Length: 248
Ligand SMILES: C[S@@+](CC[C@H](N)C(=O)[O-])C[C@H]1O[C@@H](n2cnc3c(N)ncnc32)[C@H](O)[C@@H]1O
Image (cartoon, rainbow, N blue to C red; front, side, top):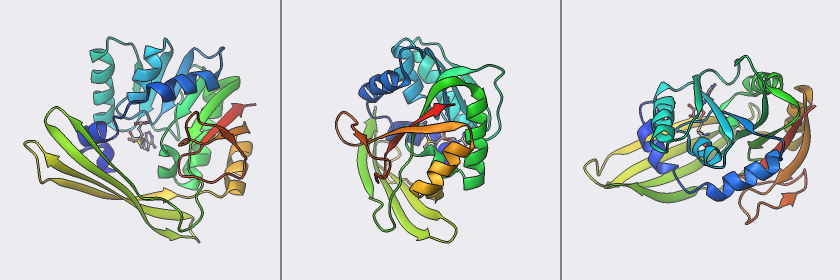
């Protein structure tokens, strides 16, 4: 995944929108007993930073050395502490347990179905009973996945970003998504970084089975786009649903 490796610097700019409000909501959903949070697939640390600013103890794991370096720099620049570990989120053991966890923006869709089961089992082992694991994962009927477009800038670098679902293989349960980051201003203007990602698509029934077979209860679903992230039904669809999983 070159977006998360050789182009991690561009990811860090393109996905660096303000997550202050989302972090406040995540802390509320994790509950008052949660002080020690794990983020698998933490990337360059934008959510870790926002949670650490709220006084939570944060740990992130990622298998991209480039992302971990950016996360280290980000947290250090903010004067915040974080434990950052190079690890595969489908097979890890950090030697201690956490009282909450978060995994935003459809990171799990990058994992195959089998790898997602392995990930959820590793998470169940890493969480204390009763802990909440908040997972953002879209459940979208065929043909309804939206194209997202936005712009971002840092210093003199300006980027135009597109994330576009292209095709779905119903039999394999995967969708191809194309990410495009075009640098539109600054010394690198004209560069375009594109990648096609194979994303696993989940039906409600498949997702429920994965959650319940790996040591969790599927406790609630929230709309990740609507203001206030209202609770919605277990049959809700959408590209950015937040699932509240409770460690049994
Ligand atoms: C969509 S990004 C999300 C990053 C971060 N959570 C955020 O919100 O900006 C997905 C991240 O998952 C990481 N990742 C993908 N597969 C992984 C795996 N098997 N183990 C650990 N990290 C993984 C990638 O390197 C990337 O940093």
